[in-house]
Amino acid sequence: MKQDDPFIESFSLLGSFLQQFPDHTRNDSPALEILNREFYQSFSEIIKREPSLNPWFTPKWINASISGIARMLEAPILKLWLTSYSDIPVEPGQKLTIGLVLAGNIPMVGFHDILCVLSAGHRVLAKTSSKDMRLIHGLSKILSHIDPDLGSRIRLTDEKLVGMDAIIATGSNNSARYFEYYFSKYPHIIRKNRNGVAVLTGNESQQELQGLGEDIFTYFGMGCRNVCKLYVPEDYDLKILLNVLDGFSELTQHNKYANNVDYHRSLYLMNQLEFLDNHITLLKEDKAIASPAGVVFYERYTEMRDVQKLLTEHEEEIQCTVSIHPDIENRVKPGRTQEPMPWDYADGVDTINFLTQLI
Image (cartoon, rainbow, N blue to C red; front, side, top):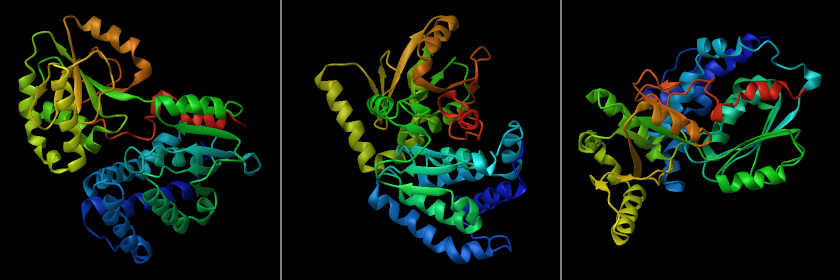
């Protein structure tokens, strides 16, 4: 790794600034005094205003995302991540322009791609999602103030991407087909729909089931790491899980989420389909992986090897797997899906390796 300390210091300072918001505590230490004077109020206003522009981005979920980003930007984490790469950043004459098509399903979901491109030494040309442009623009301005050199390598747009050397695009399965065609002449990473799944054993503690609830409901279940499919033992009583999920009743206060649950409840009733309902979420037996917001699919199993086979068959659809079972490969502990580190690359594709191999 040739990454210099100023890079880590700049992003670490950004992380310290951001952590004030989920902590609800302004910290006017010498390191943050100037940043706070310039940006604390304006970024607070962005967070406050965002729910009226995108109702899915509540202050709670914005702060959850900010907290995750701040944790990712802690100096020891960044150093641990970057020291595994010997060829970053690229030499000044090797800098490329990397086009990014950013998703907008959860707040600031595209930040990690921006971080990766900048850490590799390249330039960012990012098309922001209309659902998540204000927060990303706010972060870009703050980073530009911290480190003008980094800021000079970020260009955000809502127009057609042109003039890039490579592309990283994230979208739905439908948009991915368009991306594959439109960006075929560029080196690229094209990401499709992925979701989190959970493999239950029946031995989960109350605390672990509570953590699973967080994995299901954070961001209203709209993130690629949210659990939307359960594999449960043949004799597992799903009412045990539903009783724990009753603790997330505040979700029904959100009109859009509640309407989603009502819509699918009506749809299943009209089609005479069986499902379990605790008025917060619907549990429906279904072999599919991706479920609608407000619905969690489940599938019963008799042998763990059968589940492992299903996980292999659907690996292109799965972002992460939650389980306490030791035989589940690369499992995530319940309650930890929304705490990715910089090395937890989307779709398991090492973004830094992709960026450095372009030279």
